[in-house]
Amino acid sequence: MASSCRRPEHMAPPDVFYNEEEAKKYSQNSRMIEIQTQMSERAVELLNLPEGQPSFLLDVGCGSGLSGDYLSEEGHYWVGIDISTAMLDVALDREVEGDLVLGDMGHGMPFRAGTFDGCISISALQWLCNADKKSHSPPKRLFTFFSTLYSSLARGSRAVFQLYPENSEQLELITTQAMKAGFSGGMVVDYPNSSKAKKFFLCLFAGMTGVLPKGLGSETSDRAVSNQVQYSGQRCRFKNMKGKSVKKGRDWILEKKERRRRQGREVRADTKYTGRQRRPHF
Amino acid sequence: MKLLTHNMLTSHVKGVTKGYPLLIKATEVKVNQLDFNPQFVSRMIPKLEWGALVQAAEDLGYRQDLPGELIADYEQNEEFLKKVHRVLLEVEVMEGCLKCPESGREFPITKGIPNMLLNEDDA
Image (spheres, each protein chain N blue to C red):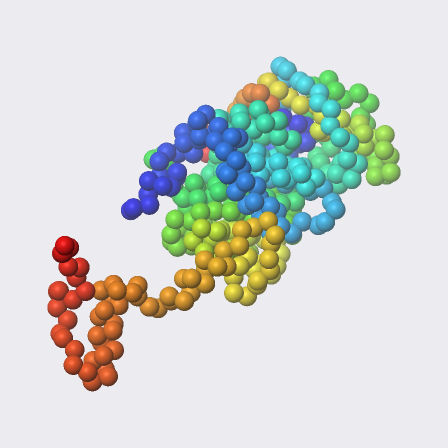
């Protein structure tokens, strides 16, 4: 797979991948910080917490606490759980306000029933889809995670996961395990037409049926969010080309010849030389 | 680790049914100053396992005059809420360990972070 070297899950287990060097990026790289904060903002928006009331939240895969900072800013109290000690050390250095726990999400959430008013997780869930040890079974680990999370959430609360799914099978695995554990809900995709701004959020409801919020930038909702980059121009450019081949390409030539043939004109037969680039002449 | 987190933490070792409350063995305890938020504290009180909180506070030597039973109209009693706030959010266990009451497994606490990782055979 061409993209495999770009996905951190394929390089090493999370507790190994997020070493001191990688963790340092999360406290120094301003672009990384900005993206993380933006995603946390959106995740909290999707949580739909009661306004003007401090909530007690769980941050799964809290890392260096960037998402937690946003929660504290909003006046919420939180507990963060992460598997990487290096990332948690960065969180300690940054003096985050929430409490931190070192733990593996695949082992289940070690919390009492009905503890949290909500749960957020930024770019962490896809790690569970990997079997890093011989004893790991991703479906089982996902189920353990979701079922223990379900019980640790208060009834009527939500869990929002931002994730980078690798393919549709992975997404399906995650959602089926979540449904098995008793959650209802589904995926919210922000900016589905943009390859860069596209973000997947898994919105789960514990013990209630809710209406799934609309993704940003999808056809049905066009609400403008001031602090999110607008990709409308870029989207139009691709829209115009929909269904048509790139001009002067072999496909385009073949299509054009076919069109002419249908018009009853005299057209040369398609051969291996059709649409082939000629050697350069001086 | 704050005592609020301790109050919510359970042991998730395989085969353990309740695993609560975890016993604290602290070697270093710190008290931070934190803004008092009466709304949050009174919201959290019904969620707390009161007995476990009092026990944990006593183990650490920060119980002071916290009553053994939860008082009835705590929402109006600001003095009481302040005491709970102090125990719940300001007292922090920095070093030590948590012990599962059922399996006896110990979870070390280093730099204020409890290590809840399990071995493969008790996950």
